Amino acid sequence: MYKLAVFDMDGTILNSKHKISKENMQAISNLEKSGVRIIIATGRPSELLKKYTNEMEIDDYVINCNGSVIGHPFKDDFLHQNTIDRENVIKLIDMCEENSYDYLVYTKDAVISKDNERLSLFKKIGESYKEEDKANIIQTEDADYIKNNFLPNKILILEKDPEKYKGLWKRIKDFNGIEYTQSWIGALDVSPIGDTKGNAVRILCEHYGILQEEVIAFGDQLNDVSMIKYAGLGIAMGNAEDEVKSVANYVTLTNDENGVADAIKKIILKEL
Image (cartoon, rainbow, N blue to C red; front, side):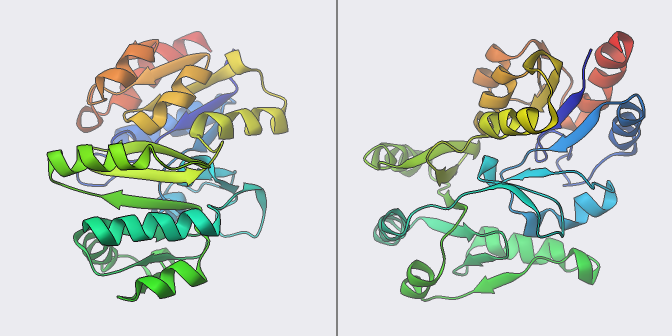
């Protein structure tokens, strides 16, 4: 019945320690052995996904940056790639600078950012990685350099203060020609217009000749809503936002309770 299973990473496959449990790994492996194609769909760029695609031995297309990039890990093979136009890049970074929002610019080749808490976390986590798993990070304090030299697949904007975060959502509504969504509380993802995880899954289905009802999708955040709604079977994590749960067909356990493995064993493998 099912031919394609799409998994979000953070808050879904990964637990709160940013690790893939043995239970999730085994369940996904069993699903693949049953003939279901495994696809990762994440807001991360490929540079921040290397460790996990290597660990899971992923050799299929991966959906990165919420759907603005669909490509093979470590190969110059892209089914889809789109960037935010220069005018919006300049306006978005100017907005961040004027309001003291932290931001990271994601391209298919690098993560570009001024020094901030999120960048420091990425660098710290990467210290223990093998060299081939490390992200290409370009750190600069020159906003003009970022604006003028990079066309991102996604810009991640961060604001921890709840009231200021509400203000960010109000400001972003004035922009045209972009998609925006939440990848976790306090994090706003900005992508090229038309690029969502749901649209990326549709592109992959057309590429492989897979029907919408043959798709399973797992997620926890607002950037997962489009693919959960698209899938024949949409599964929300127990830790998911209420909006995600409201559009899902099934709510599983949390990411710290191996919710992915639980749903695969209890629902999906029984139907195959």
